[in-house]
Image 1 (cartoon, helix red, strand yellow):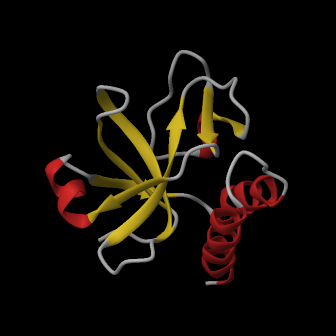
Image 2 (cartoon, one colour; image 1 turned 120 degrees about the vertical axis):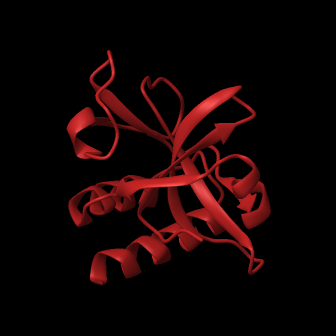
Length: 128
């Protein structure tokens, strides 16, 4: 449904509102994809704080920040994404992908399995 590097807007039940998500890879099952939240504030372990302009497909917010939350990997089935109204907003640049990859290499707020899978997906995105 979505590709690595896609920025997707959809309802996030955990936040009770629509949020932006970054597609980082396909899951173990064929119909499952994995995402990281893109927030407007940081402060949690694993957060990568970037400027609003790094995500050109997301409107600027009051904080001036786009924060990639690397502490929780969101796994969603295609059917669930459709239910949540998932729509592609755009795609990150190779430069932003490289920043995220570099951050995840040393990120201890996610599992080793998630780190390896996401780094591999980002490496493929960067190389394409």
